[in-house]
Amino acid sequence: MATAKTRTSSFSRNLSAAAPSLGPGLKCGPNGTVFLSSGIPDLDKILGGGFPLGSLVMVMEDAEAPHHMLLLRNFMAQGLVHGQPLLYASPARDPRGFLGTLPCPAASKDDKSRERDPDQEKGLRIAWQYKKYFGENQINFDGQRDGKHEYSNEFDLRKPLERHLINGQRIDCVSIQDSSDLSTLQDRCDTFLSQLPRNDDSISSAGRIAIQSFCAPQCAHSIMEWEMLSFIRSLKSLVRSSNSVAIITFPPSLLSPSFCKRWQHMADTLLSVKAIQDEDKELAQLLTGYQDMVGFLNVHKVARLNTQVPLILEATTFSIKLQKRRYLVLECLNQAPVDGSSGASYGTSGSCSSSSKTGNLDF
Amino acid sequence: MNQRSSNLLDEALGLDQAIEPWPLRGRVVAIEDRVETSGSFVLHHLLKRSLSPNSSNVSIFIAFSQPFSHYDRVLRKLGCNLVSQRDNGRFFFFDMLKLQCPVGDEGITPGGGLIALYGKIHKTISALPEISQKNVSIIIDDLSLMEVAANGSSDYVLDFLHYCRTLTSEFDCSLITLNHEDIYSIEDGSTFLLQMAYLADILIKAEPLATGLAADVHGQLTVSNKGRNKASNFHFKVKENVVECFYPGRSRD
Image (cartoon, rainbow over all chains, first blue to last red; front, top):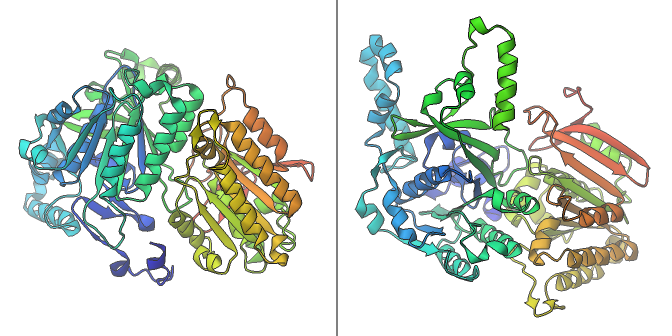
């Protein structure tokens, strides 16, 4: 990478020379990084394009809710749609069974965007004859990146992924429950990543590694804190030198506080998910669209490869919503309009109680 | 140009007056950061200053956290070409991403891992010409990963640091380390941090603002300089080509 760039000065940016030829589901990002999609278009947008190749993503689970599975499913399904190799490790006895729960991409981008915003479409009805141009533009925009596939799909959580996508591909499944130490998983990761060496001129395919509930108590290694750390460290250095992204989810409450911090330092991109209680009346009053929400996503850290400038997001807390009970969308939190009758004191008391309740909401 | 490149951070470190002789000579600089605010930009800044064209400093960079390509790109944007500096023999990059200290029956076996690394550093410095031996900076990114490489034996890492410290008196070189402040909780005892604070002549802490993250202010730095017996505190904003430092409330000058 370094040698290829030395010729181009920082002033004249020769994109055609610098940009490597990319396979499906990949796109160029700033600072010579290449992104792959997280499988959630909104999350890609929030992170500035997706997960950069060579980065380690860590997701802090909610100990009581399976919201991290939503992220994992979409991440894995997106990879399979693009034909990218996948390594999935989980503490379950039969990890392959999880593949049956992967969601299916929604029919087509046009249909979906129409479905998504029925209100907006009503507003546009006056200009109905322009609609075909909108559609065309959208297709062109997506088509630029690659001929066959879109960069990211929207997934229908109620339809399972088609069988042929799962059967026809290179998928490694590892159960981390049985092995007494991490060497098996380490070996599997080594062999998986050795087939995806870094080559900056043309990246035809990128691998995805998904490790679920890494420090789950049913795994024998969950008491070996230093071994787990050194596994994460070696995984990170392996991923750095290959065309792949690794995502690890873990329940932070099971780690000691100082190790939890160490894990967080390891992550290039650090996310956390949190469920919301049903019928939390106070929160329901405070936030618009509460009834569609299933939880919150916090973005703690965004991967900064090849740059020293931190990415400061406008908001770090997003609500996870299931639109029409099918599509996973992330939205900024919108504070509900304050009810006039309750007076000025409502706003302050309301936000105070909510912040003490949910901890890390920011508006 | 000169005015722009010297800022509050340089002032606090004593880098503003003269670059030759290297002001950090014989000093130990410890940088501590947190999950929310990365302190690696201080490392980049110091590396850039030590490799500045009108000095004869040599830097030895021990990387546990990022590959060479990352530093190369970051430093190039700061106006410093690591590849050519490496060819000139002023920059030595030790890629330690995959270093894992061998474990024997009684803990760590001597000979491998960090001891070999120390030997390598010592050899590199001894092989330098007489004139540049006096101006060597050893930069470690970062200590917490070194602990992981040593299988959690922080004593082993501390031993390594003490050895490196002897180099600062033997060759008058400087030792610059990055570590994370928040990984040492109270119940484990923060001996490692205290040891580092004791070793260090200059302690730099990068912290987020108490009010959270902001686009204009990325955090605050506290620099305590034992030699000058003085501490300074200011806000910073990290840009691709420079780090802007300013006193609270004065971001636009």
